Length: 116
Image (cartoon, rainbow, N blue to C red; front, side, top):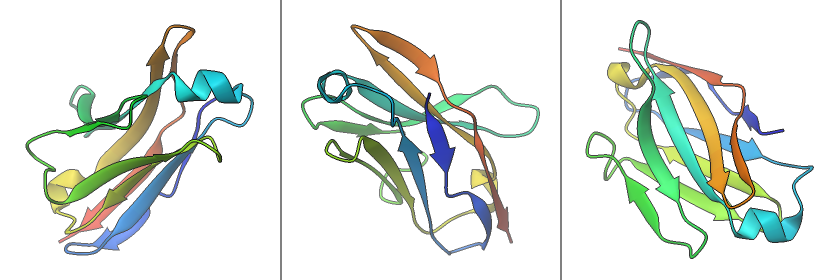
């Protein structure tokens, strides 16, 4: 029920914004859910990129701090990942993950390719 979108081909130094929508989730459940973005490069395991908690606090991994920003729009039931200053190593599939009292679910990934 998580729908990720926004990936594509971008040059190094460019920007992309990923979106993760959960249209069927009850709004109150969305508010209480923590959302994560994970990155999976070819041949590698999924790695946590950033998280947004129900209180609005966020966390970003060291490799993306200062470049990527996670945010959420509770009214739209959507989580975003703004990706700036893209690097070739940011290429891969990005997955949205929802975790909370009532849910632990993964969405389909969206492919990001950064050309150097």
